[in-house]
Image: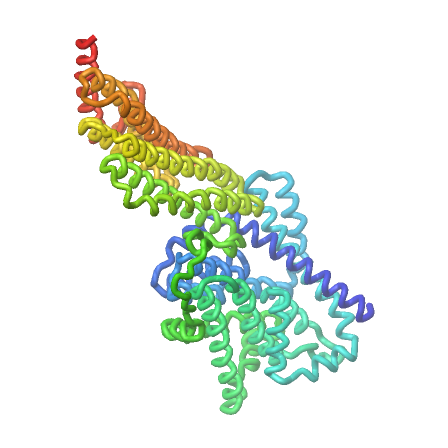
Length: 604
C-alpha cells in the first residue's frame, strides 16, 4: 500500500469513526433524553453538582465542544450564570475523556468482537421497536467506531513505511510545535475525540526496528494542544451572542490554557528532580506496553487534575473573563426591534442537543402564555376602570406574542427535523396547538380591550353588578390559567379535575351572566346599548378559558394520565368536580342567577 492509498484509507477511517460517534451520540441522547433534562434542572451554584452535570451531559452527547456550545446558548438566554457555567465547562472536559477510553479498547484482543457490534446493532434496529431499536443503533454506533479505528490502523501500515513521514514525525520534537499541531488539527475538524483517536492510532504503530511512529512524550504535548483546540468551537458559537455568552466561551479557553500551563511546568520540572517523576515514565510503568491506554489515561488525568486545581479559582476565572470581554455600551436612545423581541430561553446553539432544546421550548411557551395572561389582565383593567394608561404596554406585548407565535413554531419544526424519540415527536406536535391557542388568548384580550374603548367612545358604562359578575368570571379564568400553567410546566395531568372544574365554572358564568344581563335589562339597571358589548366580553372570556384548557389537553398525547384514588373523587354524579372554593362560588352564583331569572319571569 503506497502513501497516497494510506492517506485515503486514513480519511475513510476517520469519516467512519465520526459517523459511528454521531450515531452513538444521537441514540444515547434519545435513550437518556429525560435524564439529560433532569441533570440540567439540578444545576445550581454548587460547584461539584455543576462538574457532575457537565461530565454527565458530555458523557451522553460525547462532545465537550457540543456541551460548551450548549452552555453558551444557556448563558446567552439568561438561563445560567457565568459561575454555574464555569463548573459545568470543567465537568465537560472530564466527560469527553470517555471517548478516548473507549478508543483505547482497540489495543485489547476483543477488537474483532467490538467491530461485530455494528452488525448486531443493525439487526436489533431492524427487528426491534422503539427503545430496543434505539439501543440497537447505539450498539451499532459503537461497532462503527471500532470499524473506523481499524481502517485508520490499516492505513498506518503504509504510513509507517514512508521515510518522509517517519522523518517528519521524528523531527517534530519541539513541545510547542506538537501542541500547535494538536490545536490546529482539532480546530479544523472540531472534534477532540477524533483527533485523540488518530493520535492513539499513530502511537500504536511500530516501525521495523521496534520503535514507535510517535513517542508517548510527543503524544502528551499533542494532547495538551488538542485540549486547547477544542475551545475553538465554543468561541465560534459565541459570535453574535451576548456579552455573558462570550465570557462563557472565554472561560472554557482560560480553563484549558491554565490547565495546560500547570502541566507544562510539571512536565518540564519533574525530570530535573528525578526521571521517575517524569510523566511519560510513570505512565509507561503504570500501563506497560499499552500505548493507547497510556494516552487515554493521560487525557483523563490531565482534565481531572486541572479541574481539582482550578476549582477553587472559578470566581477568579469569571472575573478574568469579565475583564477580557467587557460590556458594550449602547448609545442612548438606540434600541432595535430585535432587542425588544427575542427569546427568553431558547437559542439556536441548543439545537445540537434536541432533548434540551425541547425542554427550553416548553419554558418559552410558558413565557408566551404569561405574556398573553398579562395582556388579559390589562384588558380587564380597561373594562373595570376604563383606564387606558397601559395601552402602549399592551400593544408592545401583543406584537411580541405575534413574534413568538411565528418564531416558536419555526423552532419547533427545527427540533422535529432532529433525531428525536417518538414521544418527543408527539410532544412537539402538541406544541404547535399550544402555541396557537396561547396566541388566540392574546387576540381575545385585544378584543376585550377594544370593547372597553367602545364604552368610552359611545359614553357607555356597566352597572356595578355587571362589573362584579365580570370580575367573578375573570377570577375563574385566572384560577384555570394557574392550574394549566402549573400542569404544563411540570408535564403533569394531576390537576385535571381542577382544570375541568374551573373550565365548567367559566361555562356556567357564560350562560348565567347572559341571563342576568337580560334580567337587568328588564329592570332598567343597564342600557341596551351596552348589552352587546357586555355579551361580547363574556363570550371572549369563555373562549379564552377554552384555549387555556386546550393547552392542558394538548399534553394528553405524551403525558400518562394520573390514577385518581377512590377517596379523592366521587364518580356518582358523573363528572369532574372543581375544588372546594370553586364549588362554593358556583353555588353562590347559581343562587344569584335563579333570583335574576325569577325576576325576569315575574316581569313577563
